[in-house]
Image (tube, rainbow, N blue to C red; front, side, top):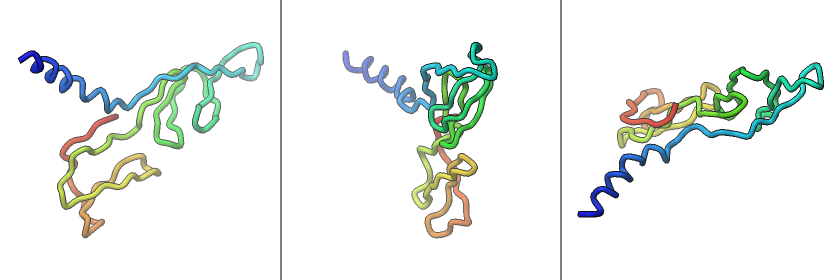
Length: 113
């Protein structure tokens, strides 16, 4: 009986293992005036962005200077006769019939975004 509360707790926090965000160390970079730190660098693309701005990088993450989160949701439950494929251009999963890629399928459950 003592294991029931533990099992319930584990089920309650299971969704946290699918977390789609992470925090990053602030890497400030100088702007036009080298004495003022006005930009930060995207750790993936190595591009500079103004403090306070948000952007989407090349691996489909929405970022600001302190954190990044996935810009898409990940299907975790789809019909058995379907499959999924990640579209890197549109930053989304396409779900379609295994035998007919032109026929889309419903996503029954997803995590993220």
